[in-house]
Image (cartoon, rainbow, N blue to C red):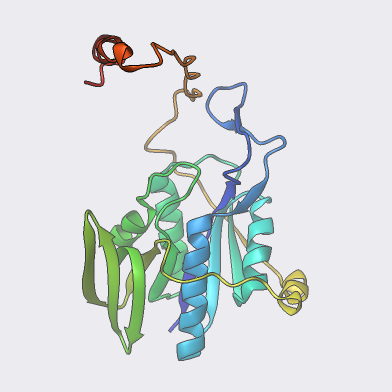
Amino acid sequence: MKIVVCVNHVPDTATRVNISSNQKTIDSRGVTYVVNPYDEFAIEEALKTKEAIGDEVFAISLGNEANKETLRKVLAMGVDEAILLKTDDNLDSLSVAKALAVEIKNQNAELVFMGKQSVDYDNAVMGQLVAAILGYNIVSTATSFNLSGNKIVAEREIEGGKETIETTIPAIITAQKGLNEPRYASLKGIMAAKKKVIEEKTVQSTGNFVNVIEMQKPPKKAAGKIVGVDASAVPELVRLLKEEAKVI
């Protein structure tokens, strides 16, 4: 059984992000990029599954030449092969999902791992979209995973609790924090990753279904206001919360 893990190349959440002059994309100058944090849990689970059943893990990433940096890190962690679906276009979620689905089908992969969401746009729909396109079963926001033959038993987070799901392959699992503890790349893995060839495939864009009209930074927070220092300030505080802040 071939295992695929989908990974994204995203800005580090600690990086200060600015909007580019076209007001539709971020300015990549000075931005540090990393493996999408939720994808690290997906990578680890794919590698653990590989170690349990003895198959290969292929990593797929969609983006431009810079995505190779992330794929090298993934290879260093222990992934066997990497594929870059190369494009310089800014694709929307559905266009990305369609491209990923095509390659997953080409690889005849029956088990696919990916993070529950990407920390750049936070749409949290990629796994569901790819599963719908391929007709695969899906377990989203998984916090535990067990594979026995073609049977999957997984636990996922829901509002106010957790639920246990049983399904079968082919399936897509989207990883949530807590699923595992991602491993670090070894020196041996880093050296081996430098020698591996990342296969490139050009993505032919069919046009986005959703277009970004404009990006804006959140408004700056207003300066704080001290209305008093003792209990006598409570009436004024309540009035401000009700009339100005409108939170009560």
